[in-house]
Length: 331
Image 1 (spheres, rainbow, N blue to C red):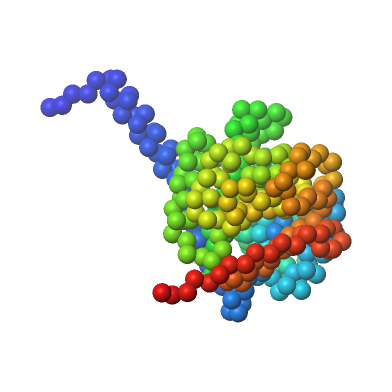
Image 2 (tube, rainbow, N blue to C red; image 1 turned 120 degrees about the vertical axis):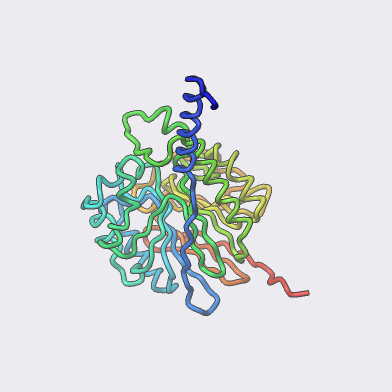
């Protein structure tokens, strides 16, 4: 009969614990199929850093989004995070959800699906509340998960939970309390995200590949580049021919081109409070556009063309950018 020493039993116990934690942190990217209009086009709006009960021009931005949404006949809205200020939601019955979302984005054109990622301010509240399907009973438009995929026929949008990548939130939280349920230990959690995102990107046959996260990879705004994403995520985006990386976090509008690939870094984090006046390296050669004020972004896609537009709080177009792709003919 085999006998186990006390030390061996302790070691086995801790191996089981590590295995359980790893399984708990395993990220399985759920995919949502979003049928388009059937004409081969896809139109949507991108907004970030917005939920302030209508203040700081949030209501004005929402009004103009409604007008542009109608003009473009949008299919859905993408939120780049920091959905509810200052500290996320306290629970599924927090009135901030209705006061900052349902009662603000009232235009008919905005009564479409909203696909949302979490931002660092959302992690300061009850994260499980924002992820809860109970919110969809209050407002059917709401869909927020940590990381997931939107399959919109000609485009796949890979929504990535970037906050747990930033070590500073764990080591230097200042006066803030973060809800880290489900992401501890963070290195295992983020490694699983990268693994699943890479697998999904490698299998994607979409004409347009778009990755969305809260934190910028490249930015000349207040927060600047997020170095951990430059080191761990950007190489993957380059390797799998991602077209666009979209984010919020910096309360501005930006368009920066990658210097080593066709990737375009598109910041739309100006849904409410902006005008920070803190800009770094605006004269960089890769910066195509920067606006230190409120606004939002639109995306129009066909199988062969992408059109990006940035709008200010008055709905005026501040910046346009187009890209064309050749259709691959069968041999």
